[in-house]
Length: 346
Image (cartoon, rainbow, N blue to C red; front, side, top):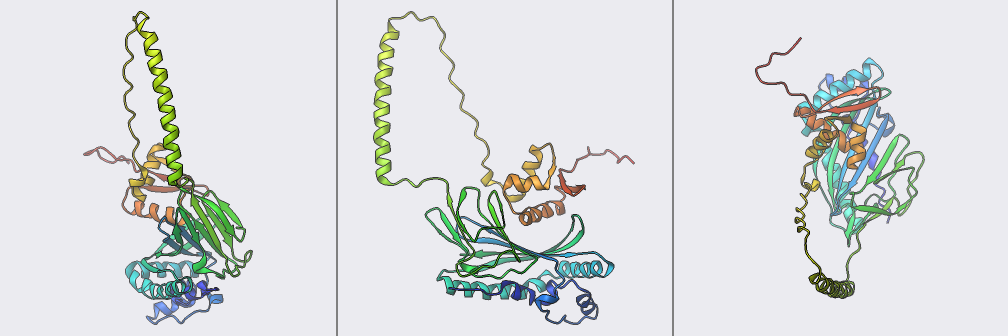
């Protein structure tokens, strides 16, 4: 099987969705539809495709287009696109969703696995690293992307033979209860729970990419359980015999010591799996004194950069979190609350 849809081609074909160049800005200003653009005409300097696998085999896809804002034209074009997306995001997700749905249907036929896509969204962001970038971010949920069976996830067959060109990064991550079993081809970079390939360094052939992860726990078979029960029975019997023997000896000894107080039951910690993404970030920042680097949030929670940025942006919009830069690092902070009826100091 060789799916090879040319994923970037159908994404680039959305035209003004990711065209950040002056030609798109001019077309928008005249109220006319921007012409379809070929991949080599796109002004995105970097494309990041992040695929976050989930227990049931679905995957949260995030596709980011990074364009360097190095002059007035590129900055004005991005700001114009940013306003258009904010005013009418549906206009930018409709055609994108149609193309994704078509791709997912083709992948489902090729893998003989039921697949659907939903939860489409688009957003924009400015990023200040060594340079200033404008980021257009698309996200959606791909159900059935990976096969899930007996605590094992196998991913990659839905995008077998995918082409990623120079300047494109593909990242596949997995849940924290899983461990990497195998990956093909060798990744160009590897994190705690993610593998990364860079276009220009890797060409995927038939059967690639392929990522297999499995849970760290061992499934218990009935023979194993029966044997375990037998061992527990022997240990319990031996312990009971020892206890009765020691009790008999203790009856002949004088008693003078006070009985030890019963140990209080330990207070269980809150289950992090019951917290929302936003609550997990807020809890982590609070546990670190109300301030920490965003990079550390990525490492602590094991999320992708894109997912963390998306959650942080939502918290900033809700006023629950603030951010500022120290050098090249993005620092998160819990907003300080002032007492009521207290005037602001100048």
